Every structure is written in structure tokens, then in C-alpha cells.
Amino acid sequence: MRIVGHLDMDSFFASIEERDNPRFRGRPIVVGADPENGRGRGVVSTANYAARAYGIRSALPITKAWAFSEAARKKGLPPAVFLGVNMEKYAEVSGRIREILRSTLGGNILIEVASVDEAYFELPSLPGGAHTGSYEGAKAIAENIKRTIREREGLTASIGIGPNKLIAKIASDAQKPDGLTIVREGDAEAFLEPMNIRKIPGVGPKTEEQFKRLRITTVRDAKRLTEAALTDMLGKWGPELYRKLRGLDDAPLVAEREAKSIGRHETFAHDVPVTDRVADRKTLESTLASLADDVYERFLAEVAAGASFSSFRAIALTVRFADFTTKSRVVTLPAPVAASDPHALETLKFQALRLFMPFLDRRENPGRKAFRLLGLRVEHLV
DNA sequence: TCTGGGGTCCTAGGACCC
DNA sequence: TCTGGGGTCCTAGGACCC
Image (cartoon, rainbow, N blue to C red; front, side, top):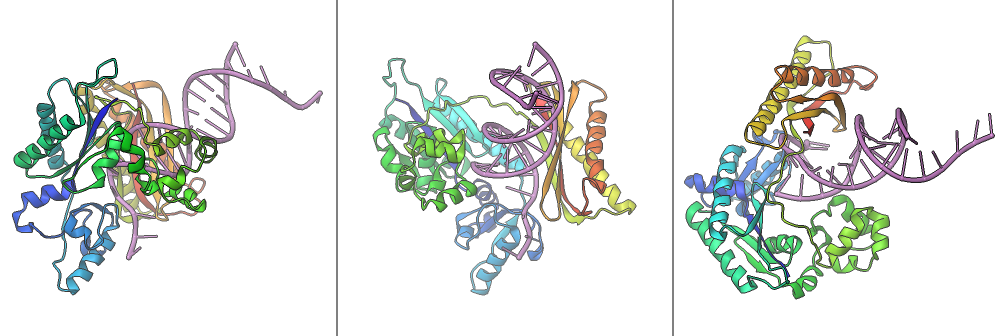
């Protein structure tokens, strides 16, 4: 038997901003793109619970968030406060929370940092299957973590405890915010059955749509399907989902994740047309160059910080057109480019440009569509 | 009301080799 | 005289997650 915990910070970015800006305390707060009075480009990153009451949530277009806020204002409610994403600050807080986890849990408890605002931990079990811990013990640990985060950071977190990562993660979401949900092994199936199929990590809009056509909305409904039927439907993911629907998951915690690629992409404030105008060409080329600078800088920083890789072998370019169609082009180089190579950045810029040039051309861009986004990524890190 | 930016993983087809 | 089977690498696209 395993005992796994999942810690999930509550509306992390927005909560940090609310904490750091006392004048916004209690107000709806939206962290994300600049709304530019309703004409902004981009989406909501995080909304606090007051903003969610207006219908504002993560991934919502910022224009729509603005409209919701305006609608509330016209009803005499406080409008939302819109703030940009200060990733450096959030990463710092994230690091301190990681330290709280480590010090609270002690040395022999495995921790997996899953993202800037999520982490798993697992209580050690003995080879025979007996357990050094218990669900009661896990509950005390979770309460201690939550209390310490509240005292030291002034933030709330939700924690789920279960027999595996899957159940722990779904449990942490079950009673947000400031929740603590414990699901014992024998209760896992009953816990999942009434839930919407979308609660299973890995089931997104497309899979949901496939299920809808079969009149399936809940986990209980989906359990009607045999493993073979799910495999026909979803390929390799089918058997995995078959087990997840039954609360089964043996994925181990991974203490140290290493990057497999490093990239950056940028949406233009206004689409850049394909013209012969020098200014437009300059915008495209200088954007590519600055993407390359950033990617290379971050790649170097990773290497310097002791990553297991020290070179890249592939370069990928992403182009998104005004109509949102997206194309990618990858080149795998004959030999890896080392971080120490004095021409590494030059190579990156040259290859980026080489991959991009055809998109200015009728062959790769017959409609002469304007560019919405450019992206650059180094892959195949070795 | 048009749809960010950082990623991971999977699929499928073609080239190429034995 | 029309076509095998296994394996690897590469490329493009898409689903999904936070």
C-alpha cells in the first residue's frame, strides 16, 4: 500500500498578488495579459475566487475577462484588478514553499515538484507492503504543511491524500480552496465514480467530445467500456485510462525532472503582414533574433546550473498565422552544438532564419497570411 | 469575446538499413 | 515483375497540462 500526497496552491499567482498588494485585498484579481481596455491580446493566467464569481477563470481570453468585469461594474460591483504575470516572484515563492515541504516532511520522504504550484510527496513504505505511516499520520503531516505555508507565506494550499498520484491529485482539487481531502484505497473507486470524466488528468476537450458521442459524461458511465474499446478509441492511452477510471495508477514519483527542450514563443501585439516593407521584415527578423538570444541564455543557465545536458542537436521553429493555423519546422543537426561552442548562438540564429525564410515565400505561405506568433526551441538535449 | 507561454508525450508516415 | 519484416531515425502535427 502506498500513501501519496498532492499539494496544490490555491489560485497561486493571484493569491500572491493579493497578499503583496493590501489595497487589493478582497477585490477580484486577474493575473494575465494586459486587457488594454478590452482590446488586449492574450488570456487569463490565474483569477482569485472573487474574480471567479464573475465567471473569470484560467485560459479565458483577456477581452472576455474584461467584459465580465465591466458587466459587474455596471451592476455596482467592484471591477477586477488586472495585473501582469511576475513569474520571477512566483518562482521565488514556489522555491520557499518547496523548502517548507522539505523541512516539514524530513529527509526520507520523496518529493516531486510537478509545476510552479504543485508537488507530490510519498510516505515511505516497507518492502513487505507494511507501511511506516498511516492515513492518520498523513493527515497530521498535511495539516502541518498547510499551517506552515499559511504562517510563513500567508497563502492557502489544498492537499489531497490517496493511495497513488492520480487519487491524490483529484483529491487535492475536491475541496478547494484551503481543502484537505483524504481518500483511502478502498474508497477510491466510489470517490471517482460520480465525477465528470474531465476530472481524470489526460482527458481533455477532444476526448470528452468522443465520450459525449457515446453518451458518456461520468467516470461511472465510462467504466461501461471494455479495455479493448478504449484502446480502439484512444490507442496506447486506452489501457492506461481503463485503469485510471478504476482508481488504479502505479506511476512513481520523479524527484528530479530534467528539461527535454527549452523554448520561447511570442505573439505579436498586432499581426505582422508578409510585405516587402523593410519595417515588417525587420520586425520578423529581430523577433527571431531576440527569441534566439533568450533561448540560448536559458539553455546556458541550465547547463551552468548543472543540468545533465550540455548541448542541443535540434532546432524547432513555430509559426502561427493570423488565422491561428500553426506550422512547425525542425532541423536535426549532423552534430550536437555544445554550450561552450563560441558559434552556438550564431548557429541557432542562422538555422532559425533558414527555417523561417520559406514562410515568406508563396510555396510555404501561398495565402500570404500575416504572422501572429513566432517561436523557437532547442531540442534533443544531450 | 478570438484563442499566452512554458512544456511533455503520442502518432503516423517516409527514409534507410539489414 | 511488383514486393517482407524488423528496426531506427527524422519530421509534422496534435492533445494535453499548468
